[in-house]
Length: 140
Length: 149
Image 1: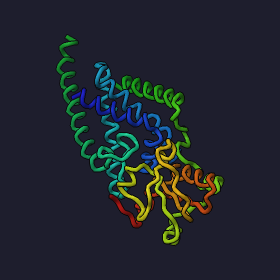
Image 2 (image 1 turned 90 degrees about the vertical axis):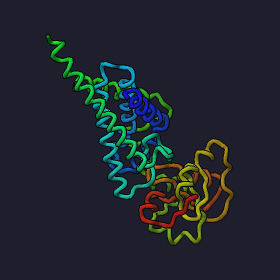
Image 3 (image 1 turned 30 degrees about the vertical axis):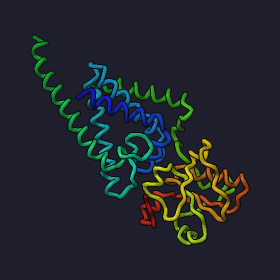
Image 4 (image 1 turned 135 degrees about the vertical axis):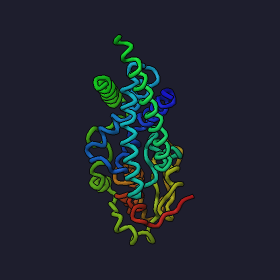
């Protein structure tokens, strides 16, 4: 599950990095950030996704932190998509780069985010359980 | 846990800053997209066209859609012809032939494809070329007449 989540975020971040102007345009179109912050968000968000994705796949020590980051990103993205859909925003979310494709449809994005949130929550819960089990043993 | 989150965020910020500064596609931190579009439209010798003025102009002008072809297929102003800036820029699509008053649009006030295509038309010697400032998105929001494939 870590691998699937990690690969998804790695792919999403990489596609955005390859087309930063397209992603910035999508962010501006969604109108959830002040214009002055669109540039910083377009530059940094893809790298948070990439770093989180790599940590989920390959950095055992940072998986907890990456799961929290991923959950935070998903919560924000989902909120933005929901508000956008309710407001009747145009048909692009920029979730996987700037172009329009099936993956960038806001309704598809909402379903996908729901599944990813479920996966990340299960991961976080499992890890918490494992930590609470191993905690007393390791201190004994 | 918080320290590890901070490490990941710092790493992302560092990598993002470096990549943005060395990438030829790097963005401005504060003005990433098309700031001052109206001023640049005028500077380029084009006419800024506001969305409230467009319905009066529609019967008299040719509409060009400068967005990517995929966007055009998904939804466009009724009667518009697709001339993606990217295709014109990389030479796979020739400039549209001169054909009277023309209004070009792209996605919204943050995109520059319409401005760039308009510049080329003006450089070629076309007169009476306008750029729709608010773009397709606002037209769509206002329930303007659109069509799709």
